[in-house]
Amino acid sequence: MGFPNVVSVANTAISTNETSHVVSLPPGIVSGDMLEMFFGCGGNLSQQIGNITGWNKPAAKDHNGPINAAFFYRAADGSEGSSVVVPTSVAAHSVALVYRVNGWDGLTNPSAQQIDGLSANADPPTRSPAWGADNNLWLAAATLVGAGTSFSVDPTNYNNPAEIASDDRIIRCVQRLLNAATEDPGAFTNSNVSWIAFTVALRGTAGGVVPSEGYLRRGVRGGP
Image (cartoon, rainbow, N blue to C red; front, top):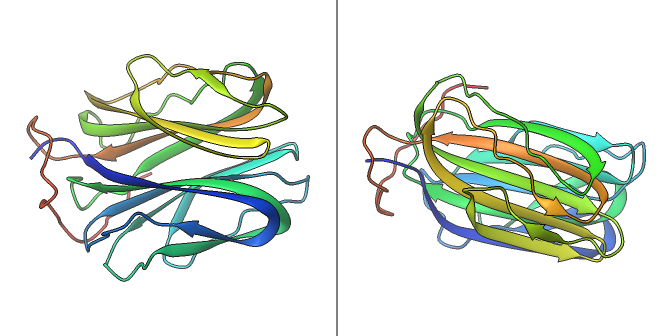
């Protein structure tokens, strides 16, 4: 019992213009895992990131054309396979990170929010999940677009970075285990370009011990 546990992360970089983006999923998915995906792509003012059958998309953002990003999640049932297709309305390059997590409470949907900007400090938003203080896994992510884009500093107290780049698009995510009702991850330091940033909370279980991989529950209930 305790905090959610990140088992593995899969990354995908697509460097050709596509409208059907084949995103790799982490290996070894079993029923009860929580899958959390950050997806980013270039585009124009009409670009839209579509829905994935069987996945939820609580947060998505277009930033004035040059960059689009979305967060998806799914409570796994073991039938997911090795990849999933993310549709976009305009052909674009893309990047994605998919987290496989266990040890969550097995009932409560992730709580996600996004924000966008143009600066050298992609700043994930403050998030206060509806369930209040608990043993939460917090993910802070940002995707950038622009020539020579890069990250140099992560938000304070966040670690275990995952990053993938495709040409001038890059996405990076860091994590923190913290029992708190509200979290403001702080900013990345990055190239001075357009960005979209996310803060996501996933609820764990009572107690304070990081769970083993064997902990699984099924089912999902609502939550913002």
